[in-house]
Image (cartoon, rainbow, N blue to C red; front, side, top):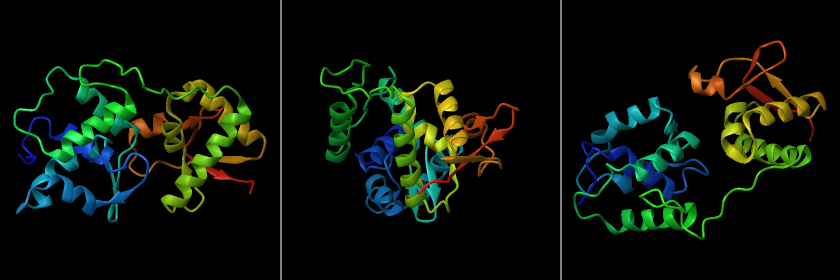
Length: 218
Protein backbone atom coordinates (compact mmCIF):
# COMPACT_ATOMS: atom_id res chain seq x y z
CA UNK A 1 0.00 0.00 0.00
CA UNK A 2 1.25 3.57 -0.73
CA UNK A 3 2.40 5.83 2.08
CA UNK A 4 -0.20 8.23 3.47
CA UNK A 5 0.59 11.54 5.16
CA UNK A 6 -1.80 10.54 7.95
CA UNK A 7 0.15 7.37 8.73
CA UNK A 8 1.26 7.58 12.40
CA UNK A 9 4.73 6.48 11.29
CA UNK A 10 4.90 8.76 8.25
CA UNK A 11 7.94 10.65 9.57
CA UNK A 12 9.90 7.46 10.16
CA UNK A 13 9.04 6.14 6.70
CA UNK A 14 9.95 9.43 5.02
CA UNK A 15 13.27 9.47 6.89
CA UNK A 16 13.89 5.88 5.84
CA UNK A 17 13.26 6.83 2.21
CA UNK A 18 15.61 9.82 2.49
CA UNK A 19 18.33 7.72 4.11
CA UNK A 20 17.99 5.09 1.38
CA UNK A 21 18.29 7.81 -1.26
CA UNK A 22 21.56 8.98 0.28
CA UNK A 23 20.25 12.26 1.71
CA UNK A 24 22.19 11.78 4.94
CA UNK A 25 25.44 12.02 2.98
CA UNK A 26 24.65 14.82 0.54
CA UNK A 27 21.82 16.97 -0.77
CA UNK A 28 19.51 15.20 -3.19
CA UNK A 29 16.89 16.52 -5.59
CA UNK A 30 13.46 16.99 -4.04
CA UNK A 31 12.04 15.16 -7.04
CA UNK A 32 13.65 11.92 -5.86
CA UNK A 33 11.82 12.16 -2.55
CA UNK A 34 8.57 13.04 -4.30
CA UNK A 35 8.80 9.96 -6.53
CA UNK A 36 9.50 7.75 -3.51
CA UNK A 37 6.74 8.87 -1.14
CA UNK A 38 3.92 10.28 -3.28
CA UNK A 39 1.50 7.61 -4.51
CA UNK A 40 0.45 7.47 -8.15
CA UNK A 41 -2.02 10.23 -8.85
CA UNK A 42 -1.10 12.04 -5.64
CA UNK A 43 0.63 15.36 -5.01
CA UNK A 44 3.55 16.35 -2.79
CA UNK A 45 1.27 18.99 -1.27
CA UNK A 46 -0.52 16.22 0.60
CA UNK A 47 2.67 15.72 2.62
CA UNK A 48 3.51 19.42 3.08
CA UNK A 49 2.26 19.62 6.65
CA UNK A 50 4.31 16.65 7.85
CA UNK A 51 7.37 17.86 5.87
CA UNK A 52 7.06 21.30 7.46
CA UNK A 53 6.93 19.67 10.89
CA UNK A 54 10.00 17.61 10.11
CA UNK A 55 11.88 20.70 8.96
CA UNK A 56 10.89 22.57 12.13
CA UNK A 57 12.20 19.65 14.18
CA UNK A 58 15.53 19.78 12.26
CA UNK A 59 14.98 16.29 10.85
CA UNK A 60 15.30 17.49 7.26
CA UNK A 61 16.69 20.61 5.58
CA UNK A 62 15.37 22.12 2.35
CA UNK A 63 17.33 24.48 0.11
CA UNK A 64 16.12 25.53 -3.33
CA UNK A 65 15.35 22.26 -5.11
CA UNK A 66 17.41 20.10 -2.76
CA UNK A 67 16.76 18.22 0.48
CA UNK A 68 19.20 16.98 3.10
CA UNK A 69 18.81 14.78 6.19
CA UNK A 70 21.10 15.99 9.03
CA UNK A 71 22.33 13.92 11.95
CA UNK A 72 19.15 14.65 13.92
CA UNK A 73 17.14 12.97 11.17
CA UNK A 74 19.30 9.86 11.23
CA UNK A 75 18.97 9.67 15.01
CA UNK A 76 15.19 10.11 14.79
CA UNK A 77 15.02 7.38 12.15
CA UNK A 78 16.89 4.97 14.41
CA UNK A 79 14.60 5.84 17.33
CA UNK A 80 11.54 5.34 15.15
CA UNK A 81 12.65 1.93 13.91
CA UNK A 82 13.45 0.83 17.47
CA UNK A 83 10.14 2.04 18.86
CA UNK A 84 7.84 -0.69 20.18
CA UNK A 85 4.97 1.13 18.47
CA UNK A 86 6.53 0.92 15.02
CA UNK A 87 4.97 -1.72 12.82
CA UNK A 88 3.59 -2.10 9.33
CA UNK A 89 -0.19 -2.27 9.37
CA UNK A 90 -0.50 -2.85 5.63
CA UNK A 91 1.51 -4.61 2.95
CA UNK A 92 4.66 -2.60 2.17
CA UNK A 93 6.24 -2.01 -1.20
CA UNK A 94 9.49 -3.42 -2.51
CA UNK A 95 11.41 -0.14 -2.11
CA UNK A 96 10.43 0.26 1.53
CA UNK A 97 11.32 -3.34 2.31
CA UNK A 98 14.70 -3.03 0.59
CA UNK A 99 15.39 0.28 2.33
CA UNK A 100 14.78 -1.36 5.69
CA UNK A 101 17.01 -4.27 4.69
CA UNK A 102 19.77 -1.85 3.65
CA UNK A 103 19.48 -0.09 7.00
CA UNK A 104 19.96 -3.36 8.85
CA UNK A 105 22.95 -4.28 6.68
CA UNK A 106 24.69 -0.90 6.87
CA UNK A 107 23.74 0.44 10.28
CA UNK A 108 23.50 -2.89 12.06
CA UNK A 109 20.44 -1.83 14.06
CA UNK A 110 17.36 -3.98 13.85
CA UNK A 111 13.82 -2.75 14.44
CA UNK A 112 13.79 -4.33 17.92
CA UNK A 113 17.00 -2.59 18.93
CA UNK A 114 19.28 -5.62 18.53
CA UNK A 115 22.66 -5.11 16.93
CA UNK A 116 23.58 -7.13 13.89
CA UNK A 117 26.89 -9.01 14.34
CA UNK A 118 28.39 -7.55 11.18
CA UNK A 119 27.82 -3.95 12.19
CA UNK A 120 30.88 -1.76 11.83
CA UNK A 121 31.03 1.04 14.36
CA UNK A 122 32.76 4.33 13.61
CA UNK A 123 36.20 4.43 15.18
CA UNK A 124 37.10 7.17 17.62
CA UNK A 125 39.48 9.89 16.52
CA UNK A 126 42.48 9.44 18.77
CA UNK A 127 44.72 12.44 18.05
CA UNK A 128 44.68 16.12 17.15
CA UNK A 129 46.42 15.48 13.83
CA UNK A 130 43.80 12.92 12.84
CA UNK A 131 41.00 15.26 13.93
CA UNK A 132 42.53 18.12 11.96
CA UNK A 133 42.52 16.13 8.73
CA UNK A 134 38.97 14.83 9.25
CA UNK A 135 37.67 18.30 10.12
CA UNK A 136 39.30 19.87 7.07
CA UNK A 137 37.96 17.16 4.77
CA UNK A 138 34.45 17.72 6.14
CA UNK A 139 34.89 21.50 5.86
CA UNK A 140 35.89 21.23 2.20
CA UNK A 141 33.03 18.84 1.42
CA UNK A 142 30.36 21.00 3.06
CA UNK A 143 31.79 24.19 1.57
CA UNK A 144 31.78 22.67 -1.90
CA UNK A 145 28.46 20.83 -1.80
CA UNK A 146 26.44 23.64 -0.23
CA UNK A 147 28.18 26.68 -1.76
CA UNK A 148 28.88 28.15 1.68
CA UNK A 149 31.36 30.79 0.47
CA UNK A 150 34.09 29.63 2.85
CA UNK A 151 31.93 30.06 5.98
CA UNK A 152 30.97 26.60 7.17
CA UNK A 153 28.61 26.25 10.16
CA UNK A 154 30.46 24.65 13.06
CA UNK A 155 27.38 22.67 14.05
CA UNK A 156 27.50 20.89 10.71
CA UNK A 157 31.13 19.91 11.18
CA UNK A 158 30.34 18.66 14.69
CA UNK A 159 27.39 16.59 13.47
CA UNK A 160 29.34 15.12 10.58
CA UNK A 161 32.08 13.96 12.97
CA UNK A 162 29.42 12.65 15.34
CA UNK A 163 30.47 10.44 18.22
CA UNK A 164 34.03 9.94 16.97
CA UNK A 165 35.07 12.56 19.53
CA UNK A 166 33.48 13.89 22.70
CA UNK A 167 31.87 17.32 22.67
CA UNK A 168 34.59 18.82 24.86
CA UNK A 169 37.37 17.28 22.75
CA UNK A 170 35.77 18.64 19.58
CA UNK A 171 35.72 22.11 21.15
CA UNK A 172 39.33 21.89 22.30
CA UNK A 173 40.69 20.67 18.99
CA UNK A 174 38.70 23.22 16.96
CA UNK A 175 40.11 25.96 19.20
CA UNK A 176 43.59 24.50 18.71
CA UNK A 177 43.11 24.64 14.95
CA UNK A 178 42.29 28.33 15.35
CA UNK A 179 45.35 28.88 17.53
CA UNK A 180 47.46 27.25 14.80
CA UNK A 181 45.99 29.59 12.15
CA UNK A 182 44.31 26.73 10.31
CA UNK A 183 40.73 27.87 10.94
CA UNK A 184 39.21 31.13 12.02
CA UNK A 185 36.12 30.67 14.19
CA UNK A 186 33.64 33.48 13.67
CA UNK A 187 30.49 34.73 15.37
CA UNK A 188 27.11 35.47 13.85
CA UNK A 189 23.86 33.62 14.34
CA UNK A 190 22.91 30.37 12.62
CA UNK A 191 20.47 30.63 9.73
CA UNK A 192 17.29 30.02 11.73
CA UNK A 193 18.52 30.77 15.28
CA UNK A 194 17.72 27.15 16.23
CA UNK A 195 18.82 26.52 19.84
CA UNK A 196 20.22 23.07 19.03
CA UNK A 197 22.40 24.49 16.25
CA UNK A 198 23.71 27.20 18.56
CA UNK A 199 24.39 24.54 21.20
CA UNK A 200 26.37 22.55 18.63
CA UNK A 201 28.47 25.62 17.84
CA UNK A 202 31.41 26.64 20.09
CA UNK A 203 31.90 29.12 22.92
CA UNK A 204 35.38 30.56 23.23
CA UNK A 205 37.22 31.23 26.47
CA UNK A 206 35.29 34.50 26.87
CA UNK A 207 31.96 32.74 26.50
CA UNK A 208 31.25 34.19 23.04
CA UNK A 209 29.47 31.91 20.59
CA UNK A 210 31.36 31.03 17.43
CA UNK A 211 29.04 29.63 14.75
CA UNK A 212 31.18 29.54 11.61
CA UNK A 213 34.59 28.29 10.57
CA UNK A 214 36.71 29.87 7.84
CA UNK A 215 39.70 27.98 6.50
CA UNK A 216 42.94 29.99 6.53
CA UNK A 217 45.30 27.43 4.98
CA UNK A 218 45.14 26.05 1.41
